[in-house]
View 1 (tube, rainbow, N blue to C red):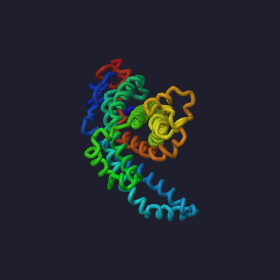
View 2: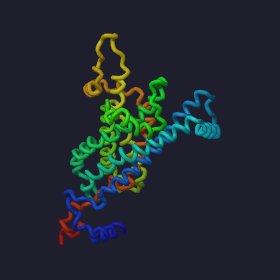
View 3: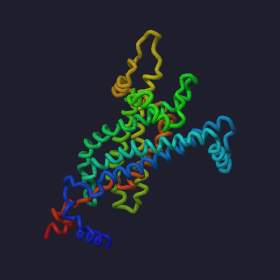
View 4: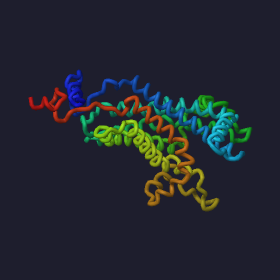
Length: 348
Protein backbone atom coordinates (compact mmCIF):
# COMPACT_ATOMS: atom_id res chain seq x y z
CA UNK A 1 0.00 0.00 0.00
CA UNK A 2 2.81 2.38 0.85
CA UNK A 3 4.53 1.89 -2.48
CA UNK A 4 1.27 2.41 -4.40
CA UNK A 5 0.60 5.69 -2.61
CA UNK A 6 4.21 6.74 -3.10
CA UNK A 7 3.93 6.01 -6.81
CA UNK A 8 0.74 8.06 -7.10
CA UNK A 9 2.34 10.95 -5.27
CA UNK A 10 5.38 10.90 -7.54
CA UNK A 11 3.39 10.62 -10.75
CA UNK A 12 1.16 13.55 -9.96
CA UNK A 13 3.71 15.93 -8.50
CA UNK A 14 3.85 19.32 -10.16
CA UNK A 15 7.61 19.05 -10.57
CA UNK A 16 7.78 15.64 -12.24
CA UNK A 17 8.22 17.03 -15.75
CA UNK A 18 10.90 19.53 -14.68
CA UNK A 19 13.10 17.64 -12.24
CA UNK A 20 13.19 14.11 -13.64
CA UNK A 21 16.37 14.77 -15.58
CA UNK A 22 19.91 13.71 -14.76
CA UNK A 23 21.54 17.08 -15.36
CA UNK A 24 21.97 20.21 -13.29
CA UNK A 25 18.64 21.77 -12.34
CA UNK A 26 18.75 24.51 -9.72
CA UNK A 27 16.67 23.70 -6.65
CA UNK A 28 13.83 26.13 -5.82
CA UNK A 29 15.14 26.61 -2.26
CA UNK A 30 18.54 27.78 -3.52
CA UNK A 31 18.30 31.48 -2.79
CA UNK A 32 21.09 33.63 -1.36
CA UNK A 33 18.96 34.81 1.53
CA UNK A 34 17.80 31.33 2.57
CA UNK A 35 21.23 29.74 2.16
CA UNK A 36 22.89 32.43 4.28
CA UNK A 37 20.11 32.30 6.88
CA UNK A 38 20.25 28.57 7.47
CA UNK A 39 24.04 28.61 7.29
CA UNK A 40 24.17 31.28 10.01
CA UNK A 41 21.66 29.39 12.15
CA UNK A 42 23.70 26.19 11.88
CA UNK A 43 27.00 27.96 12.55
CA UNK A 44 25.83 30.05 15.51
CA UNK A 45 23.93 27.26 17.24
CA UNK A 46 26.73 24.76 16.75
CA UNK A 47 29.48 27.04 18.01
CA UNK A 48 27.49 28.41 20.93
CA UNK A 49 26.91 24.84 22.06
CA UNK A 50 30.54 23.87 21.52
CA UNK A 51 32.00 26.91 23.27
CA UNK A 52 29.59 26.54 26.20
CA UNK A 53 30.60 22.96 26.97
CA UNK A 54 34.28 23.60 26.29
CA UNK A 55 34.17 26.48 28.76
CA UNK A 56 32.74 24.11 31.38
CA UNK A 57 35.38 21.52 30.51
CA UNK A 58 38.30 23.93 30.88
CA UNK A 59 37.11 25.50 34.13
CA UNK A 60 36.19 22.08 35.54
CA UNK A 61 39.81 20.99 35.05
CA UNK A 62 41.11 24.18 36.66
CA UNK A 63 38.87 23.71 39.68
CA UNK A 64 39.75 20.01 39.95
CA UNK A 65 43.40 20.94 40.44
CA UNK A 66 42.50 22.87 43.60
CA UNK A 67 39.98 20.49 45.18
CA UNK A 68 39.36 16.79 45.65
CA UNK A 69 37.71 15.10 42.67
CA UNK A 70 33.93 14.72 43.11
CA UNK A 71 32.42 11.35 43.99
CA UNK A 72 29.02 10.09 42.88
CA UNK A 73 26.31 11.73 40.79
CA UNK A 74 25.38 14.30 43.45
CA UNK A 75 29.02 15.23 43.93
CA UNK A 76 29.46 15.82 40.19
CA UNK A 77 26.34 18.01 40.06
CA UNK A 78 27.60 20.15 42.94
CA UNK A 79 31.03 20.38 41.34
CA UNK A 80 29.43 21.48 38.06
CA UNK A 81 27.46 24.21 39.83
CA UNK A 82 30.61 25.34 41.63
CA UNK A 83 32.44 25.47 38.29
CA UNK A 84 29.76 27.68 36.77
CA UNK A 85 29.87 29.98 39.79
CA UNK A 86 33.57 30.81 39.40
CA UNK A 87 34.51 34.28 38.17
CA UNK A 88 36.75 32.91 35.44
CA UNK A 89 33.86 30.87 34.00
CA UNK A 90 31.54 33.87 33.88
CA UNK A 91 34.09 36.15 32.23
CA UNK A 92 35.17 33.61 29.65
CA UNK A 93 31.56 32.72 28.83
CA UNK A 94 30.93 36.23 27.48
CA UNK A 95 34.08 36.16 25.37
CA UNK A 96 33.29 32.73 24.01
CA UNK A 97 29.72 33.75 23.18
CA UNK A 98 30.98 36.77 21.22
CA UNK A 99 33.42 34.58 19.32
CA UNK A 100 30.81 31.88 18.64
CA UNK A 101 28.27 34.32 17.21
CA UNK A 102 30.87 35.99 15.00
CA UNK A 103 32.61 32.89 13.68
CA UNK A 104 29.34 30.96 13.42
CA UNK A 105 27.40 33.61 11.50
CA UNK A 106 30.09 34.92 9.16
CA UNK A 107 32.63 32.13 8.73
CA UNK A 108 30.59 28.94 9.05
CA UNK A 109 27.48 30.59 7.68
CA UNK A 110 29.45 31.32 4.50
CA UNK A 111 30.82 27.78 4.31
CA UNK A 112 27.40 26.15 4.63
CA UNK A 113 25.74 28.57 2.21
CA UNK A 114 28.52 28.16 -0.37
CA UNK A 115 28.37 24.35 -0.23
CA UNK A 116 24.61 24.40 -0.85
CA UNK A 117 24.99 26.93 -3.64
CA UNK A 118 27.64 24.94 -5.52
CA UNK A 119 25.93 21.53 -5.21
CA UNK A 120 22.19 22.21 -4.98
CA UNK A 121 21.36 21.28 -8.59
CA UNK A 122 22.59 17.68 -8.57
CA UNK A 123 20.04 14.88 -8.21
CA UNK A 124 20.14 11.38 -6.78
CA UNK A 125 18.39 8.27 -8.04
CA UNK A 126 15.05 7.37 -6.57
CA UNK A 127 15.46 4.29 -4.38
CA UNK A 128 19.18 4.06 -5.13
CA UNK A 129 22.56 5.73 -4.85
CA UNK A 130 23.96 8.79 -6.56
CA UNK A 131 26.38 7.26 -9.06
CA UNK A 132 27.88 10.56 -10.19
CA UNK A 133 29.08 11.68 -6.78
CA UNK A 134 32.53 12.53 -8.16
CA UNK A 135 31.00 15.55 -9.92
CA UNK A 136 30.70 17.27 -6.54
CA UNK A 137 34.44 17.18 -5.89
CA UNK A 138 35.56 20.18 -8.02
CA UNK A 139 32.84 22.44 -6.66
CA UNK A 140 33.52 21.37 -3.08
CA UNK A 141 37.24 22.10 -3.47
CA UNK A 142 36.42 25.49 -5.00
CA UNK A 143 34.13 26.67 -2.20
CA UNK A 144 36.48 25.29 0.48
CA UNK A 145 39.31 27.39 -0.96
CA UNK A 146 37.00 30.38 -1.46
CA UNK A 147 35.65 30.47 2.10
CA UNK A 148 38.83 29.44 3.96
CA UNK A 149 40.15 33.03 4.41
CA UNK A 150 36.85 34.34 5.83
CA UNK A 151 37.46 33.04 9.34
CA UNK A 152 41.13 34.08 9.53
CA UNK A 153 40.66 37.59 11.02
CA UNK A 154 38.22 36.30 13.64
CA UNK A 155 40.63 33.59 14.75
CA UNK A 156 43.60 35.96 14.90
CA UNK A 157 41.56 38.53 16.83
CA UNK A 158 40.79 35.88 19.42
CA UNK A 159 44.45 34.90 19.65
CA UNK A 160 45.45 38.55 20.04
CA UNK A 161 42.83 39.13 22.74
CA UNK A 162 44.05 36.26 24.91
CA UNK A 163 47.74 36.90 24.19
CA UNK A 164 47.44 40.54 25.23
CA UNK A 165 46.73 39.49 28.81
CA UNK A 166 50.07 37.63 29.01
CA UNK A 167 52.24 40.62 28.04
CA UNK A 168 53.85 43.03 30.51
CA UNK A 169 51.66 45.98 31.45
CA UNK A 170 53.63 48.44 29.34
CA UNK A 171 53.10 46.29 26.21
CA UNK A 172 49.43 45.46 26.68
CA UNK A 173 46.84 47.01 24.37
CA UNK A 174 44.12 46.74 27.01
CA UNK A 175 41.46 44.93 25.00
CA UNK A 176 38.30 44.79 27.08
CA UNK A 177 36.49 42.08 25.12
CA UNK A 178 36.71 39.98 21.98
CA UNK A 179 34.59 42.46 20.04
CA UNK A 180 36.81 45.30 21.29
CA UNK A 181 39.91 43.54 19.98
CA UNK A 182 38.23 42.71 16.68
CA UNK A 183 37.26 46.35 16.10
CA UNK A 184 40.44 48.01 17.38
CA UNK A 185 43.11 45.86 15.72
CA UNK A 186 42.36 46.87 12.08
CA UNK A 187 42.37 50.56 13.12
CA UNK A 188 45.45 50.51 15.37
CA UNK A 189 47.56 47.86 13.63
CA UNK A 190 46.20 48.01 10.09
CA UNK A 191 43.84 45.56 8.32
CA UNK A 192 46.72 43.32 7.20
CA UNK A 193 47.54 42.53 10.83
CA UNK A 194 44.56 40.17 10.99
CA UNK A 195 45.89 38.16 8.04
CA UNK A 196 49.59 37.90 8.94
CA UNK A 197 51.04 34.39 9.25
CA UNK A 198 47.62 32.90 8.58
CA UNK A 199 48.66 29.91 6.46
CA UNK A 200 47.97 27.33 9.21
CA UNK A 201 44.47 28.74 9.82
CA UNK A 202 43.74 28.88 6.09
CA UNK A 203 44.91 25.28 5.64
CA UNK A 204 42.84 24.10 8.58
CA UNK A 205 39.70 25.88 7.33
CA UNK A 206 40.13 24.53 3.80
CA UNK A 207 40.55 20.92 4.90
CA UNK A 208 37.78 21.23 7.50
CA UNK A 209 35.21 22.43 5.00
CA UNK A 210 36.10 19.99 2.25
CA UNK A 211 36.31 16.93 4.49
CA UNK A 212 33.38 17.71 6.79
CA UNK A 213 30.77 18.52 4.14
CA UNK A 214 31.80 16.22 1.32
CA UNK A 215 32.33 13.14 3.50
CA UNK A 216 28.98 13.66 5.26
CA UNK A 217 27.23 14.16 1.92
CA UNK A 218 28.83 10.98 0.56
CA UNK A 219 27.98 8.87 3.62
CA UNK A 220 24.40 10.18 3.76
CA UNK A 221 23.90 8.90 0.23
CA UNK A 222 25.63 5.56 0.67
CA UNK A 223 24.25 4.73 4.12
CA UNK A 224 20.72 5.59 2.99
CA UNK A 225 20.56 1.87 2.25
CA UNK A 226 19.81 1.23 5.93
CA UNK A 227 16.87 3.64 6.00
CA UNK A 228 15.42 2.50 2.67
CA UNK A 229 15.63 -1.26 3.15
CA UNK A 230 15.21 -1.57 6.90
CA UNK A 231 13.36 0.07 9.73
CA UNK A 232 16.36 1.91 11.15
CA UNK A 233 15.34 5.56 11.78
CA UNK A 234 17.39 8.14 9.93
CA UNK A 235 18.36 9.92 13.15
CA UNK A 236 20.64 7.02 14.11
CA UNK A 237 22.31 6.96 10.70
CA UNK A 238 22.66 10.73 10.86
CA UNK A 239 24.37 10.54 14.26
CA UNK A 240 26.90 8.05 12.87
CA UNK A 241 27.47 10.12 9.73
CA UNK A 242 28.06 13.30 11.75
CA UNK A 243 30.48 11.50 14.06
CA UNK A 244 32.53 10.00 11.24
CA UNK A 245 32.60 13.19 9.15
CA UNK A 246 33.61 15.32 12.14
CA UNK A 247 36.31 12.86 13.17
CA UNK A 248 37.79 12.81 9.67
CA UNK A 249 37.69 16.61 9.43
CA UNK A 250 39.59 16.93 12.72
CA UNK A 251 42.13 14.21 11.90
CA UNK A 252 42.90 15.54 8.41
CA UNK A 253 43.11 19.22 9.37
CA UNK A 254 45.08 18.95 12.63
CA UNK A 255 48.59 18.31 11.21
CA UNK A 256 48.42 21.21 8.74
CA UNK A 257 46.49 23.64 10.94
CA UNK A 258 48.06 23.04 14.35
CA UNK A 259 51.18 20.89 14.15
CA UNK A 260 52.75 22.91 11.34
CA UNK A 261 52.36 26.05 13.46
CA UNK A 262 53.98 24.43 16.48
CA UNK A 263 56.82 23.13 14.31
CA UNK A 264 57.72 26.71 13.37
CA UNK A 265 56.91 28.48 16.64
CA UNK A 266 58.08 25.96 19.23
CA UNK A 267 60.59 23.52 17.77
CA UNK A 268 64.11 24.38 19.05
CA UNK A 269 67.06 25.09 16.79
CA UNK A 270 70.13 22.88 16.94
CA UNK A 271 72.20 25.81 18.16
CA UNK A 272 71.87 29.55 18.72
CA UNK A 273 73.42 30.39 15.34
CA UNK A 274 71.84 27.58 13.37
CA UNK A 275 69.03 28.37 10.92
CA UNK A 276 65.51 27.38 11.83
CA UNK A 277 64.78 23.82 10.63
CA UNK A 278 61.83 25.13 8.55
CA UNK A 279 63.19 28.64 7.86
CA UNK A 280 60.40 30.14 9.99
CA UNK A 281 57.97 29.24 7.22
CA UNK A 282 54.63 27.53 7.88
CA UNK A 283 54.39 26.31 4.29
CA UNK A 284 57.75 24.55 4.56
CA UNK A 285 56.57 22.83 7.73
CA UNK A 286 53.31 21.77 6.06
CA UNK A 287 55.28 20.48 3.07
CA UNK A 288 57.45 18.44 5.42
CA UNK A 289 54.31 16.89 6.93
CA UNK A 290 52.86 16.13 3.50
CA UNK A 291 55.93 14.21 2.34
CA UNK A 292 56.76 12.48 5.60
CA UNK A 293 56.61 8.72 5.97
CA UNK A 294 55.68 8.98 9.65
CA UNK A 295 52.48 11.03 9.71
CA UNK A 296 51.53 9.63 13.12
CA UNK A 297 54.33 11.74 14.60
CA UNK A 298 52.28 14.88 13.96
CA UNK A 299 49.21 14.02 16.03
CA UNK A 300 50.41 14.46 19.65
CA UNK A 301 48.03 16.69 21.58
CA UNK A 302 45.21 16.46 19.05
CA UNK A 303 42.54 15.42 21.55
CA UNK A 304 43.61 17.91 24.20
CA UNK A 305 44.43 20.92 22.01
CA UNK A 306 42.02 20.59 19.12
CA UNK A 307 39.34 17.91 19.30
CA UNK A 308 38.16 18.85 22.80
CA UNK A 309 37.42 22.37 21.57
CA UNK A 310 36.25 21.78 17.99
CA UNK A 311 34.49 18.41 17.88
CA UNK A 312 31.15 19.40 19.39
CA UNK A 313 31.00 22.67 17.43
CA UNK A 314 31.58 20.91 14.11
CA UNK A 315 29.24 18.06 14.98
CA UNK A 316 26.37 20.36 16.00
CA UNK A 317 26.89 22.64 13.00
CA UNK A 318 26.78 19.68 10.62
CA UNK A 319 23.71 18.22 12.32
CA UNK A 320 21.79 21.51 12.11
CA UNK A 321 22.83 22.13 8.50
CA UNK A 322 21.47 18.74 7.47
CA UNK A 323 18.23 19.44 9.36
CA UNK A 324 17.81 22.56 7.23
CA UNK A 325 18.15 20.60 3.98
CA UNK A 326 21.69 21.55 3.00
CA UNK A 327 22.43 17.96 1.97
CA UNK A 328 18.99 17.08 0.54
CA UNK A 329 18.59 16.76 -3.23
CA UNK A 330 15.90 16.03 -5.76
CA UNK A 331 15.32 12.38 -6.64
CA UNK A 332 14.97 11.19 -10.22
CA UNK A 333 13.79 7.89 -11.73
CA UNK A 334 16.36 6.42 -14.10
CA UNK A 335 13.83 3.94 -15.54
CA UNK A 336 11.27 6.48 -16.65
CA UNK A 337 11.27 8.69 -19.69
CA UNK A 338 11.54 12.43 -19.67
CA UNK A 339 8.33 14.00 -18.46
CA UNK A 340 7.28 11.06 -16.27
CA UNK A 341 8.10 10.03 -12.74
CA UNK A 342 7.16 6.35 -12.68
CA UNK A 343 8.64 3.28 -14.34
CA UNK A 344 5.18 2.21 -15.53
CA UNK A 345 4.91 5.18 -17.89
CA UNK A 346 8.04 4.09 -19.72
CA UNK A 347 6.11 1.27 -21.38
CA UNK A 348 2.96 3.21 -22.27
